[in-house]
Image (cartoon, rainbow, N blue to C red):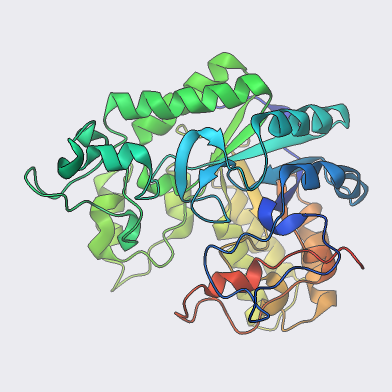
Length: 386
């Protein structure tokens, strides 16, 4: 498949936000009765109208695109635990609010990127509940079950409340594509595909082709990140070649290459979130070599980019909602953070900037310490009094 020629995306500056944590009209961010956010499903009150109110703020910072967390009805604040693909989550607003956000954003000369989650849903979603034998088994083949006579289902990477969709089923693929096409007709400009590594390349190609048939300048890029996924979960992933699968299975003896797996999506998607670029930055920062004037860094980055076609869209970023804040990795050195931002902005690639970085938002300790809900440390509410 020919790569998409949507040149508007090549140097886009993306402000990435979690709707619930961005703006709900608060001055001081809300807290629960214990004075902190210590539960996975705490909704703080950020909403679509709150995003609309801050579009000028985002534009004044120099951004010309907004990437929103998923909008469909969800069991949790972050939107990745979908309950219903036909409804906007009532915590954040309505379809009318979403249309207003799209229209207002476009009026300001900015773009909207949709975070789309076709890999799994929440176990209480009606479509999954209907698939259980005890409830009639309707559309049972929309999900993966371990046996025909029991309701034991395959879960997304072992998270027991997230059943995995069977995207090899043409009905499921068609269902997901139909939901995406609706968003394109409303005005969405690009899609970030969550956990693209868990979806067949054939589905991703079909998805991309379908949405670009509705509007040719749509960009579809994926989150391709094997971090923390062990060989025992290989059956949930879809590799382009047997050789790549074998490399993944042998990761205990040889590190699995982030860069190599990203190149496999050339021809499947328009681009990927460039975790390999972030790894290069972190390697230099952790080695104490810094960013500004770092010839080694410059060489590594040039060699990395040279491995991809020029029209394959590598979305650069320093951190996101699933990683430590880059300021944490900089040991709270704001100057080093700024150097990384300026270095990345100067590169001829899309750049995604996580909300709150302009407020020097950080976390401590690391979110990768096996504590429950540790990612809440990088998903704090914005403070608008400052």
